[in-house]
Length: 270
Ligand code: SF4
Image (cartoon, rainbow, N blue to C red):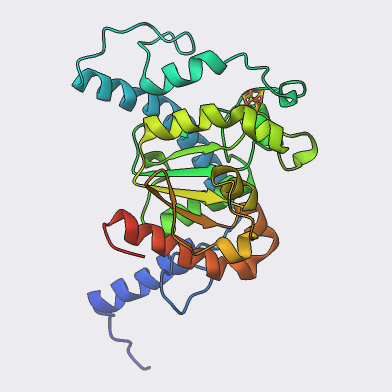
């Protein structure tokens, strides 16, 4: 009988690394065109939801910490949370019963955003979908799971960024927001950007980049990958995760955009 020699530690580690990389789908190499493949696993979904819920609390806590550092924690209490008002709470407070545009008619909740304030990276989508409207949080459905994986593919935890949408109330039937709705909500978005004070903004989808920079008229296929500026802040447009779910071949381009974001956050150039 042939005897088998025991594998070395290096062999075991190499095998384990291969298994982990394959499992996570995190293969950030030029060769791999789907570095953030989405595996629809229920366990991961639950992890994402829990992490999102934590991020709302954490965002508030971080904002309060910033306030304390600035010596301003003796300010008024937030009417939204009951805790001392954070900079984001103060921005949001005047909008909490907003009826400035027709989107107020059919919404369940106003989805203001979630995440850390201030944050080095701010993500801006188009508008809440059905699940976001029901839960009051941005990007919690399948698109949200993919977004989380996209961030993880460049070593960014979702909790460390701020995520919002151009309009905060769900457009019926998931249609694009109308220009007057975008304009009605613009003041809030601008105030949020101001308080998040990001180093880089990543917009998700054609509607988001055109709403942020109204002078642009090209489609997202031409705009993505370009380094643009919003009031001096770097902006990288990319595809909406919902589009990537429908068109997996576009993930290769989105991966290039993510790598650009990572370079910019690390202080590099385009
Ligand atoms: S989308 Fe914006 S402007 Fe319109 S009702 Fe909602 S919060 Fe107000």
